[in-house]
Image (tube, rainbow, N blue to C red; front, top):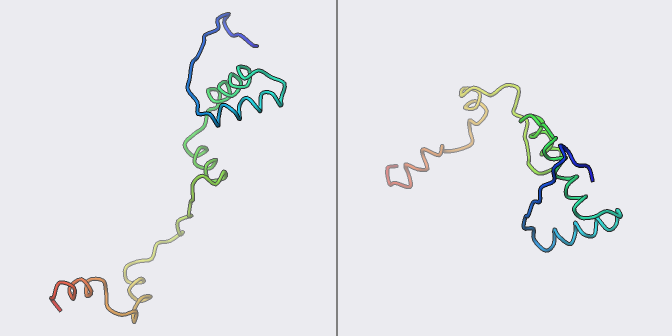
Length: 102
């Protein structure tokens, strides 16, 4: 085990049974102690410097969040009105009707 600055501290944490079993199985498969496996994982976490943009890109790449690229140009209200003409009553008309104001 690598020790930095000569000291070693003990860290106690709680993990669920499934995670514990997976850690133990991986450590055994790699011929390592659980302590070595967890220490290496924690070291990797604190050494990782990630900008907000890198974090977002990583989560998208890992499929953990969905991202839809915004359009290059947003339609104007006139363009939306022209595009949607003939679609029927507006929501405002329906709200007026539901309130008995039609």
